[in-house]
Amino acid sequence: MPVPFSLSILFEDNHLIAVYKPSGVLTQGDKSKELSLMDLTKSYLKERYKKPGNVFLGLLHRLDKPVSGVVLFAKTSKAASRMSKAFRERKVTKVYWALVEGVPDKKESTLKHFVFRESNRTKVFDKNLPGAKLAELRYRVVREFDKYCLCEVVLLTGRKHQIRAQLAHIGCPVLGDTLYGSSARLGNIALVAIKLEFSHPINNQILTIEVPEQDFSSAFNIV
Image 1 (spheres, rainbow, N blue to C red):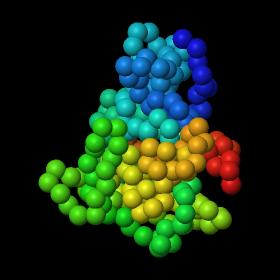
Image 2 (tube, rainbow, N blue to C red):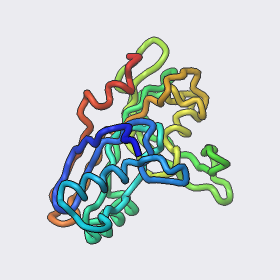
Image 3 (cartoon, rainbow, N blue to C red):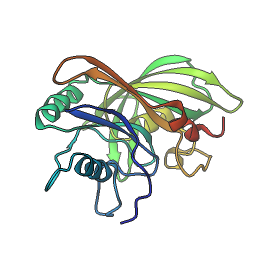
Image 4 (cartoon, one colour):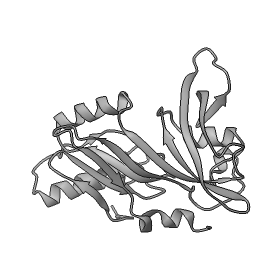
């Protein structure tokens, strides 16, 4: 199978490995059989450490296929169990940068909506409805341009397509995200998971893992 991208390692120790996911790459393999970030990371570990048989790699979270940025995996079952719990309990800070069309009415705010999945989209409502799930995030406008702006977003919940759907709901779709109403066709979407901050599952050290600027600048090539 051809390898369409090389692995960029942002952090690694005996328990965790964090890698950069390019836009257009699956976090985990699916029925399409495309090479995924998880596949390539397993191959790296197998070759780097001469591991026989199957390599353990714990999937802790995902990024949407068109989104780039930091993805964290666990190298041991103990780390996987503890980090999965930290993600569920919202003890991992997840920070994104998004270029969006327009400028939000408020330069800094918390968005609280209720969401449903419908086909391949997330539908957003201002009020709670039976079966809906709470979606919450914080954003702040970092820089304004003529027709769009750069926002920093901190996820407070982890719903599928949450950032994309909520920003579109307030009239500011992520650039390139035609699924949620963007008029720009970039071949990707201008949304990058730039930072994860959490307590190490074994030694409790506070870790901050960030994407180097050169790795995400291509997502913002229209700036």
